[in-house]
Structure formats: structure tokens, C-alpha cells
Length: 221
Image 1 (spheres, helix red, strand yellow):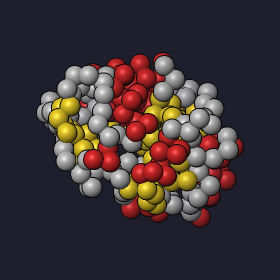
Image 2 (tube, helix red, strand yellow):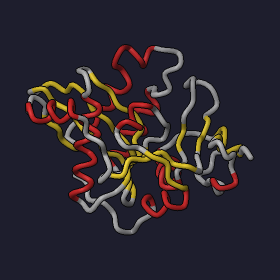
Image 3 (tube, one colour):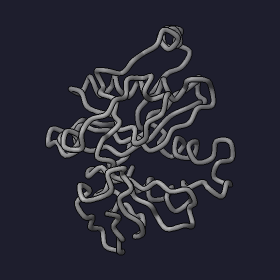
Image 4 (tube, one colour):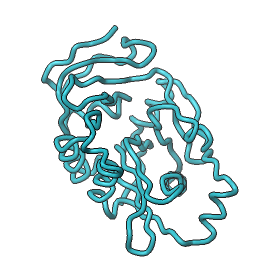
């Protein structure tokens, strides 16, 4: 079943959506709606920012467990050289801009991360619902990622790299930080070879909710 959303912030149970994850259309994106959607495993993903919003809620979730992240030999060498340093939530707006604007993405017709959504994510960050990971070369931001945080989960939304493997470095730093906080999952949303090579695997929706709705929350800067 594909649901038609209205302008309220309520969501039908995702378990009644399509098995492939195509869950709903319509509604609008606001901080309040996203704050309800992400912990339920619902996220917006659409091709053109001016078309109706498409919402997804896969019943099999592609995630990286913080204690299972794979660090390749080349990434270990990159980390050991200590050229780059990583931080958490020190430059959220800059990471957001990097994800939106790198390679002039924001000017493309199919760029969904437009000005309105950027403002929404800034509000979520101010409310403590969204965090970023930054990769620095000296004082220059060269990569990073951002996402929604809830329970013992980090739900990744987008990433960017200005140097090779910067986004991988950000993911490794994120997983190690989460592990120090007792462990959790990084929701990758969509399967890619890059994420699979880093240890991402599928878990059931029920197991996923145990992390996103956990009362034992991770601590974030």
C-alpha cells in the first residue's frame, strides 16, 4: 500500500507500506514531520525538488553496526598518516553546504537538497536532532556527513568529499565515536557497493526500531 499524506505530522504504520520501501507521497517537509519520521525509519527521497515528496520506509534496513565497520588497509594507512582530523558537530552548516553545493549540485534540476530543506536541517540541528561529522585538512573542511540522531542510531542523510576517501574517514570516525558511547547503528538508507564494503548489512525493521526508539540514548556534542 502507498499512503497519501496530508499536512498533519502523523504517519501510518510503515509495516503496511510496500515491501520494497515505497511508502507514501505528498505532505510537506518540516522539522516537526522529520522529527517524527526518522525514528520510525521513514525518510524522504525524491528526484526533483519541485515534485511531490516521496517517502520511503524499507522493511529491511541497510545499516553499519559501530563495532562491525570495516577499515581497509588503505584507510588504516590514511588514518595513521594523521594528515586529516575529524570532529563531530563543530561545523554543521558548512557540512550541510558541502553536501548541497559540491560540484554545483544545488543548481541541478534533480537536486532535492534545496534551500527549504537546508533550513529545515538547520532547525533540526539547533534542536539537537541532527549532527554532523567533519573532516579537516588543517583549517580547511574537505569532507563530512550529516544525519538524524535518535536512540542508539545515526540516520545518515548525505555526505561529501573534496579529497579522496574523506567521507569514508568521516564514517569511520562516527562509528568509533558511537562505539565509545556504548555502540549503535548507522542507517545507510540505501545499499551501495561503497557502504557494503565498509561492513553494512541488512537487519529487520523490528530490530532496527530497537535502536532508533531506544531509551538508552547516545550522547552527542
